[in-house]
Image (cartoon, rainbow, N blue to C red; front, side, top):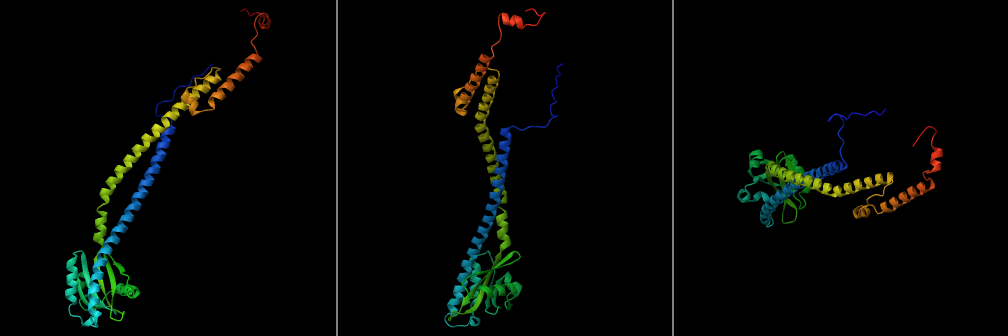
Length: 286
């Protein structure tokens, strides 16, 4: 007795994904990971680039002020004897409204003149912060600009040379690093929008490209399966030129199978005539 199994109810069995869907999902996951990683690295690189660009901009102003003071000190005048220091730093601050403070100090860290928020912090007379003094002691003898971060503020320090090439003092410039970072973070919505558009476009292109690529392959595989089934039933398969080009060895394989089937039929012919009557069991009539 042949038992017929009922078809499973819709939604009760596990959902099986096709090969095309699996490849599309795999490529889309890889594309999402690549785009997100690239976007994160690009943002960090952009943030670093913007910060370096802003620092270079203030470094130019810092070197300009240091050069004006060095021009007077190189004539043999002591830096503590200069009388126009306040006017110098006021002019320097007027050139760029992003400068939050300027400090002119001696080689020992004593403040000679200050303007901006730094003036309110240390006063026109006093000493520069310990962090500034350590950075200046490390880089003050060279032409490098020392950078010291203090919360949301960034300080740039540069040494001033005397007539003998020694360090007569230094100048410090401060600006708001928090404002720079806030301006960079303000570009995040636009970056997310453009990144989302690129991501959706990439996912759509990936899906269409994989579907167009695998569609003819799946068609040829179905034709190959049908041809093999026809061979199993002893019938010559329908080998189209496209299928032969897709599987060059399929035609030779089909010819060998058909030859073997024909040879087996010739070796074991079906009995006919009197032999068939003799082989028929007793009591059985044709």
